[in-house]
Length: 377
Image (cartoon, rainbow, N blue to C red):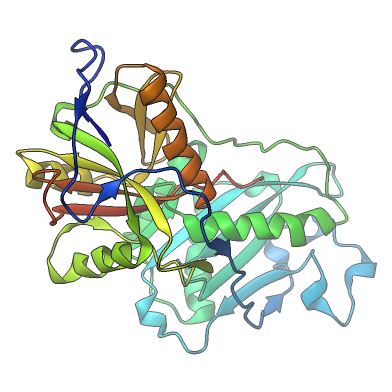
């Protein structure tokens, strides 16, 4: 395993590559031959549908008479209002939300907009179509209140969203309701659900426009210089069996460590305990302050960029940092490519571990990450 000093190439020259033999529970990264990892679709709940509200210009939506069939659950023009009956409504305090146009035209030839809301477990599922002339913070605020009233939910404490172009509208609606808006690509349940809806709903809608590009595409800006408070001192490509990853995640609460987990069961993701998950171990003499600063960010993913000979840290919606650089040569390029390839083989699953020393068994911070492609809408 190669261990390199963390640095920003604009501040200092390329670091010297050091040899490091791990003695902790982390093992040197090796290219996997086979990883047992599969996405298993979550069992669909019984869906509760309702007709569009006439107060939002029902007549402008493309809903032909043929759509009024007995099997409305199979009707792509229908909307969804669902709360798992086994879930305590008071426990659903964090929402994931998308408010965007869809590749669907209404009878005026204008793109239909849709509000999609869920929680991380998909115990809450809500969709509603809107004409493009009512897209504002008032409509969104009223819709949030309507969802809560209809399903007996409390006003959420937090709402995560992933489109920077909608930040003003979402932030204003949230502010008026006392909700904390969180721009973040950690809307993983929402990502997976939108991908499913594209295949099972939007493409079957009578107004679907094949080849239509998303109106609000996700940002992928040029990576910036890393802030001083996020600098580590050394890092290494590592891997852990998934059983150990689960132990680290479960210890986040018991040891009050910094970090973030993912409920893979709720996401419908199955991983064998012996599967080796690729990760990045970061060591710093100021590990706790570093982990604390990192904990204040919505850490989304880490990418090995072999063209730049750098690691790219993505946080929030559209913030990308040059997290570390390394001296580019055939050996380091091969290791970076193998690590990135292993991450893709794992469906994007990887982790970030912050330690006081790379030889340590203890982590000060641990983030389980899932690098998913953006939804097709």
